[in-house]
Length: 205
Image (cartoon, rainbow, N blue to C red; front, side, top):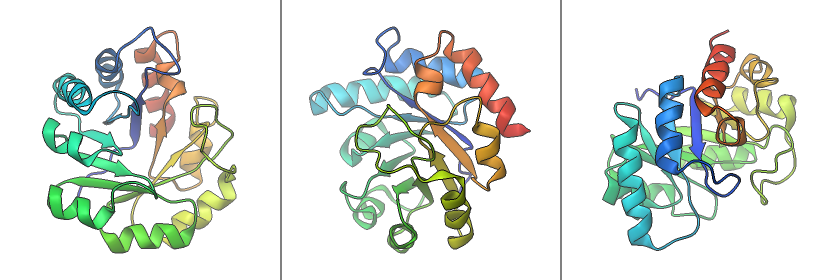
């Protein structure tokens, strides 16, 4: 069985511009993040590949997951991809990436989650748990009760996302999430390494 990380730090250069994707990956790994997700919507495919390769080197032994772009994941020899409902089909991604790749699927309902599982997803990204400004299309807030229902309704790890910060990470984990994915809680903090360490502490509690 694949080891799905408990703290997915999604690198971002839109909400902040102090740090690059590579710098954020290095700081998050130094702080104890066990998965890095590279997400960038803009830019040429060649530029995305070059950045993803650099991020992969920065990750060392920590798995790198590329958001949305299967082609970039393949070119960068990433450890997997995370795919939304309107992205590349999970089953097709599995065919291209192979059984060893880590594939996550976004789901906002139990039906979507089960469909992701049928197609071959290894984990489900579920949210937004709380209100978030990191994603304009995040959708309605789900809350902890919906998270509990999702956790009990599927048999693969649930990675909670959306508005998760040091103040509420613990309650998200207690609600049954396998792990959390964060953007602002690390990328937009004064010291991303320290912010990552504090989140790891909350997860381990």
